[in-house]
Structures are given as C-alpha cells and as structure tokens.
Image (tube, rainbow, N blue to C red; front, side, top):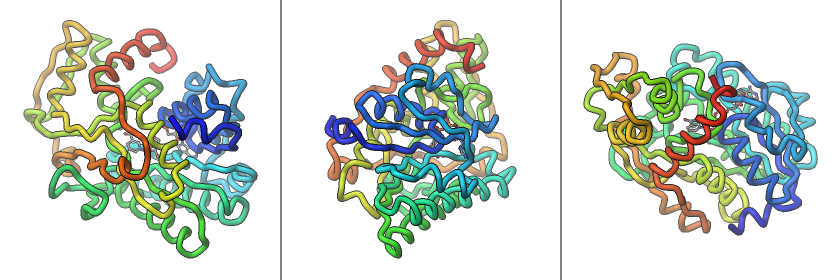
Length: 330
Ligand SMILES: NC(=O)c1ccc[n+]([C@@H]2O[C@H](COP(=O)([O-])OP(=O)(O)OC[C@H]3O[C@@H](n4cnc5c(N)ncnc54)[C@H](O)[C@@H]3O)[C@@H](O)[C@H]2O)c1
C-alpha cells in the first residue's frame, strides 16, 4: 500500500499507542521504516498493554505519559511528522456514568495535544480518532459524513467537540488536522477485562470460557464491524493523503451485520457456544442508536484504501490470537 511506503523514515507519534488500534498502527508503521514514539498513560480501565508492543519493543520509543500533561505533550510532539491522537476514555456507557472524567480525558486531553502541536509541531499532520457515536440515532443508512449529529452519549458529544477543536485549529492556525469516525472495531490486542467496549472481543472471551453470549432483544440491530488491521491501514491512508486536511472521514467495513449474526459467527467458530436472548436493559436501550453502516464513498474517493478482511476472517484471526496469548489479556 502506498501509505505504508510514505511513512518510511517519518517520525510518528501515537497517543494511546499501547491500546488495540494504536499498537496495530505502530506495528505497520515501524515495520515500514517509520520512527515511532508512543505516549500512553496505561490507565487500568482501558486497553493499554505492553504485550501489544512486545514484537516491536526495540523499534519504538515508549513514554508512559498522559495527554492531559502539558509538559509531556510539548516534549512528545517535537520533531514529529504525523500525530495519531488515539488516547481516550473509550467506553460510551462509562462516559454517561462519569462525564467529568470523559470531559477531562476526551476534551481537555486533546486540546492539550492540539496546543502542543500549534506551538511545537505546526507542520505535523494530526489524525484524531473520533467515533460513529457522534451520529447518535441514525436517520438513514448507510450513514455519510453529512448525517446529523444526534449524539446519545457524553462520549459522542465530546468526540464531536474535539472534531470542532480540530476544525478550529485548522482554520485559525493552519494546522493539518483530520478526524476519523470509526465504526465498531474488533481484533487482536483489544482489552478483554470488561465489556465496557468491544463487544465482539467480549463475546470471544465469553465463548472461550464456555459462557453464553447474551443478546438484547432479538439482536436485529445492524452494526459495522471493522477488523483492526484494516482500520489501522485506513488511518495511515488518511494521514498520508494530502487532500484530507480539515476533513472528517468515516472508517468502517461498509457492511451491516445484525448483532445476532455477529454472535452466531463467534459461536460457529467456537463450538458448543450458547446464545441467549434477554430484554433490553433500560440504560442500554437509552443509548441504543439504531442500525449503523458507514458510507465509505468519501474515503474511497480520496485514498487507495479498501477493507480486506471479511467479518468471519477477522473473528478467526482474533480467536487464534487469544487462544495463544490469553494470559496477557485476562
Ligand atoms: N474500541 C472502540 O470500540 C472504538 C470505536 C470507535 C472509536 N474508538 C477510538 O479509537 C481510539 C483507540 O481506541 P482503542 O480501541 O485502541 O482502545 P484502547 O483502550 O485499546 O486504547 C486506548 C489507549 O488510550 C490510553 N489512554 C487512555 N487515557 C489516556 C490518557 N489520558 N493519556 C494517554 N493515554 C491514555 C489507554 O491506556 C489505552 O492504551 C480511541 O480514541 C477510541 O475512542 C474506539
């Protein structure tokens, strides 16, 4: 892929780079000859895991640091060509229970990165990992980037706020920024400690432990599940494509899979898995967005990226990974 060649020799900063998406990206970038610096606070609720970086530990610079720490971020951005700002409080359900924490990490943290970038790395390209949750309740599918933002969670509201910070820094200070609205990622290297986010991975853990997969209602809601390796390649493509500056892009598989079908695929791959239906819990029903499928026309027109793994292939690779490495994840 062109974008992998383009990062060769470049300096890349990945915040949240010990997590699932950041560490996958770090592997691609480091193996393509980029010099990778990772800043991760290793907060216990999220997916930071040094095992995620074990294969490339001597090829990347790892700094334990927090995106809310002004001095740490000012040091981290010096000399970088690309910044992938992926650190986050990742759970939309946690965001509603502890909105101040979400505000602190998911808004103040990214504003700190932007300020550091404005002062010490004004030529760097900054890619921000936003989320499909900015759309909230969907009015039509597939959802394109002009769809209304009917956020139904504090997490979605704060992701949208940061997109607007990026637009402001792009327009006011000429920073090279781009926001990427990620669908439902899954794959190797995700945290498996709790089900606050990453339901496909959680179902894989449940099935490997011979526990039933619980679905709410009939599980008819459509989701767009994207395999993390496709996602990481998509982020690199967006970063290295010049015309993406100041824009917002969807990044998903572009395929709608019913929740029940997702569970059935996991169950097919791990024999003797039972699926059970329960009524929707009130707190989940409130934040439920309805069907979601990414419209990928914009990213396809701008870049050479295409998702490669089918959902089943992604699930099989994920199971294989955790069968080998489960002791590092739970
Ligand atoms: N996983 C999903 O369901 C999903 C969906 C859409 C968008 N995203 C976004 O993608 C990005 C990466 O998510 P992921 O799936 O790799 O999750 P992850 O939990 O695996 O990684 C997040 C990383 O951020 C780190 N982190 C958290 N707070 C930090 C802070 N204050 N300073 C520095 N590091 C901090 C964590 O330690 C962790 O390593 C996030 O911005 C997330 O919001 C994730």
